[in-house]
Image (tube, rainbow, N blue to C red):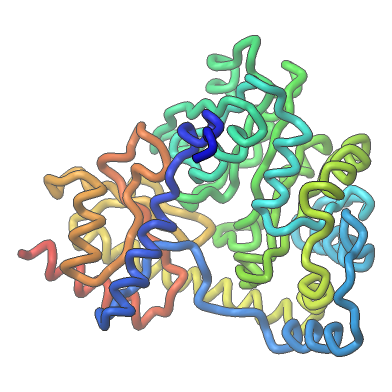
Length: 386
């Protein structure tokens, strides 16, 4: 057997994916499993998006696109950011990628030196650490708290920046907590990073799924941040593997050079289909579905309190509830397995998102229908009674 790179031992296991595979195996064996685990919307691409892809396929438009993506799509994304999130950007700064994962791979390849530290909050999306590791960097999880909405703060940056630190990676709204960073606090954080000549990667993949007030991009606070976004969540196109990044103008050429080798281009047919996302009819569909997610959140929050599983911070975006199970007398891995095997409910143990709160927290996704959420609550209640 070939000798593996040492980084393979450092990569974090993505428990949400392992749980998904376990749940699928149970379903194949005939057990009904309600998934509150993986962050995949139960909605799929609207008909006009599917039809646009089909037209492109019939027209033979399945060849390579430029490494940075089809220019009409880059222009549509730039206009979307202007209209919905208040950021005026040159379309040339938009680079279409193979999902947000492709964008994070390119961002880390372009920015992270060997041994360079990247600060991020604990809890965080576990794959973020792996993107840094893959680039030869060192992810540093900084424990956060409910008082800070489980986000990284300007004070955290100031206290934890070392000579080895190169930048920060944050998400607003966040996976797993569904919490956003308030604009003034994000501005302070970005100022601390800029003062130290570092980079800031801001994941806005859930920005379209914001429920409280007007969503604004970090680009309205600092034009030099690196933005990550995707067609997977707000646009409900997970398997299409299409995302984008918005970078400062002087980063475009280097990132495009790296993209030409690492991904050649994002899936071209998916790009043609995605152009239809920005039609008036499709945008109405996405907004209607956003309201459906909000309705699910508003149903679940009081139900979790009733079950004795408090939610320390009300999520204001995404489709996750980050709950405290301290009172249940078991750790998150044990509770996750009991939920799956005894109640037929898949939910992710907090250990997936960092050690600071991992043993006593759980992430529940409400990216499934309200009827199934109601059944899940009933099953959890019965398990807790036992």
